[in-house]
Image 1 (tube, rainbow, N blue to C red):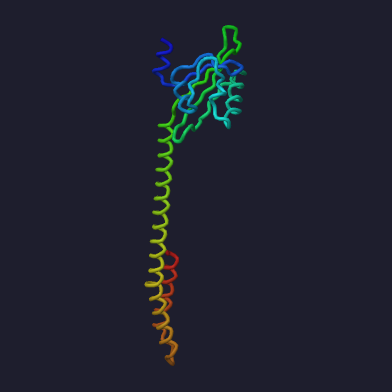
Image 2 (spheres, one colour):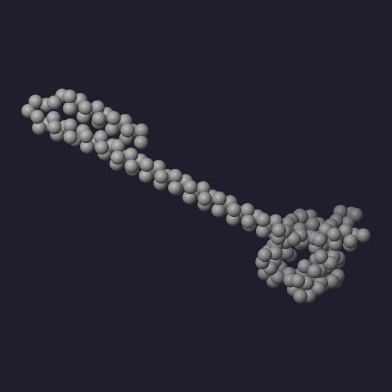
Length: 194
């Protein structure tokens, strides 16, 4: 019954002793390790024989911590794109002494791929927001430039004409100067609002 229950869970379960010898391994764990190393592990093998050389030390460390009653979980990428969450759990006997460690490997590939897709979508959305912001800023700058060129430039040209006409008259034309001052005030307000 236990073996059938562990098979239904589809998590790889491997119980190891202090010397890293396998005391129990379910078929899911055997299948997983056989895919990776083309050799099917059985009870009595060393679990270290079924680990990548570059990862042996980290697995030893986590197994040793579990024997010190410190459970831990590690995410590993096997062959791309396949990820597993490997848990290292102490197994105390009836006296509380930790005699074995249970290694549980759970396939988290779907979750990792969803996470990767979500990150990509977030990045694309962020880029769209940045692009829209830049376009809005450019549009605003363009509008301000047009406003400065069209409106303010025309007002200043008018002020220049009023001033020149008033300057060339023998008697300064106060009406033209008033209009020039009025137009300058309008121009100042327009620039302020821009």
